[in-house]
Image (tube, rainbow, N blue to C red; front, side, top):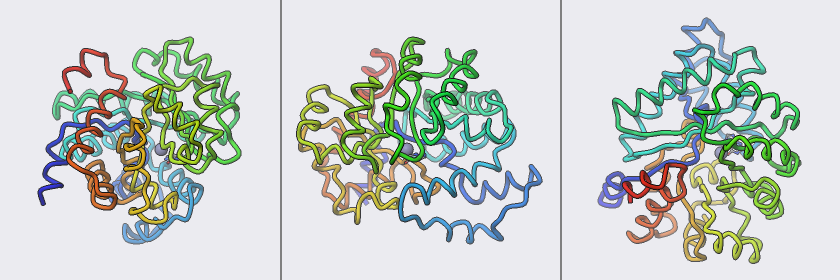
Length: 326
Ligand code: HPA
Ligand code: ZN
């Protein structure tokens, strides 16, 4: 229809995408076959049937299990390229992708295998699809800050090819302040800083991400709306929120899409963006997220244009590159 054509035709950026979360069940079987790994599922259909989550942790358990088929540099390269082909068809011009190195190093896959594979996929996507991208190293917040420091050290030789650090995994019980030191160290190395906050965690976690981690963006941020002083602060600072509608629905952050806070965020003057988070697990890539939200909460053409503009102004591209996209 015309709304979906308009969305696809709109140049936009994706700022919240976990590349491990783009692993489709078909590709999981392909990687398992070529790496001679036995999967605990009999079929693609059985994998898809397991994708029924009632909270973040339910999802994370199966997401970390799925990532076990990623073994070689070629796996990471192919994973990235499959994602870029889909998101290019959705009208994306730029992507800032997260990866979780600790998920890989913990099972004996060297940091360089994941990073080199992803970086070569990113370079190929820029050449062949015209989609630019940047890489963000995420620390797993259920692990210790010491482990995060070790990961930053392992990444030392790659920091010229990594735009920033992020914070993901189990939010409740792992407040941003736990990572204050390693985020300070990342800032001293010239890295941008982002953190998942306010997805399941309280508004206090969003305050902490701002005041103690000095983040440049908040990932999700939904629960910020419970705190009017926080909303004022986010609006005044023009802080970008990377919102993920289908993720919010599948992880029961919202009860149904009609209740999604995206429209309210825009009305409150918050710099919201629309993103896919883990598209293979949550049932849709970038355009599907835009479409689902637009239909359910009644986004106008003007709202869609604002969201597209926000996706570039909230990006970590250089100012002249941002200007060329606006
Ligand atoms: N939240 C926290 N951690 C994650 C997510 C998410 O939505 N996706 C992948 N890791
Ligand atoms: Zn996420």
